[in-house]
Amino acid sequence: MFATHVSAWLQRRGIHYGWIVAAVTFLTMLTMSAALGLPGAMMKPLGEEFGWSTEQISSALALRFALFGLMGPFAAVLMERYGLRAVMCAGLTLVGLGMALVTTASQLWQLFVLWSLMLGLGTGMTALVLGAVVANRWFVARRGLVVGMLTASAATGQLAFLPLAAWMIEHWGWRSAIVPIVIGSVVIALLALCLVRNRPSDIGLLPYGEAPGTQPAPAPAFTMNFATPFRVLREVATNRTFLILAGTFFICGLSTNGLVQTHFISLCGDYGMSAVPAASVLAMMGAFDFVGTILSGWLSDRYDNRKLLFWYYGLRGLSLFWLPHSEFTIYGLGLFAMFYGLDWIATVPPTVKLAGAAFGPAKVGLVFGWIFAAHQLGAATAAYGAGFARTLLLTYTPALYTAGAACLFAAVIVMAIRRPTKTAAAPAAATTNAAARA
Image 1 (cartoon, rainbow, N blue to C red):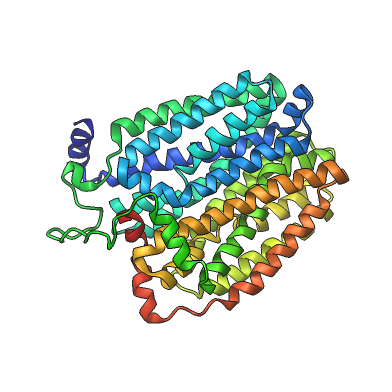
Image 2 (image 1 turned 30 degrees about the horizontal axis):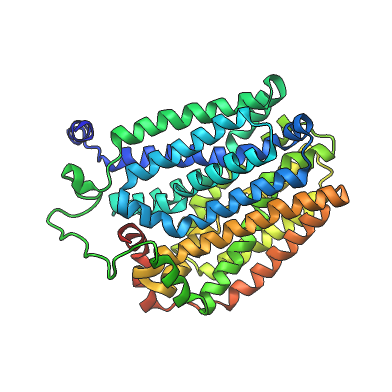
């Protein structure tokens, strides 16, 4: 009822209610991604207080990334069965509780329960699939802009909050940095409860930009249940395009979330840089990422997406090779932050477009869910592997070189994807509709 009154009030002022749903979704994904990135700033204080090694803490963070990714194929099923509002509130509750309870933890197994299980599942429920579903249920016009902004929020939130968190940890202890995430989770869950509705028809509206009198979208070709993602995976498991996209997205996660997001502050500490300026460099990456991801969405509508991915992965690989030689000065790290930040998740729009062209609207949502799962498995591999290398070799340099070489490999193999035909482009344009209806 409240949402209906707000919608009517906005309509009188020429504002579509879809923008309210998009705004709440933006805040949800921003908060969840900030919660996902925060533990990377806490590795050193946790190790100092409890005596845990970098490898032990990294193992908990790696499992968190794995669960976050593996929730992707099932997030659309949950949204179809229980609705956007219920899934958003459940995810925010899991994350808020997990972050609040970790302040009382004293054993390593508790870190696994709270940060690996609760944080991994909670953030996975509101990952990129949520942005795709909201954009495609509520928008016809400006859909690409909405998808780009929501996608950018998912990475920017992981980085933008870190300078404040690092300052709070330095002055008030690591537990203080939990407070903004917990408060944000509670406030945004209340906003979602009051304002979010599953579809425009729930409050008597058409999607933004939909022509009056348009017939409702047809029902999906098959009924989705929790076995459907496994059936789709079995069907595409031997497809060359799927294998290349999943493999390159594995490398994408390995070279971003798992390595730099998780270990960058610890890496800078090895070179004598304190947490606050190191986190500020991450925030700079987040700012460049916000621009780069939206620009990537614009470019993906106009240029060969394979060539875009070639440049994104190639430049990322070169920037990772550069990082150990940057001398960790403001100039050196600033140069790294610019090139690396611009394509932090700029790979998402071209990957989605290529998946849509290859698999069509009926399956692309679930297929991309599995590709995204590969991304987070790559992140989990790097989160643990880099921590293990740091514990064993006392340096992150081999991990940086390995990730850089993997990115160059991804830049080469992505060109082996068959060039999408013009006839395949039409289904690709409807991919987001499929993700919403699936």
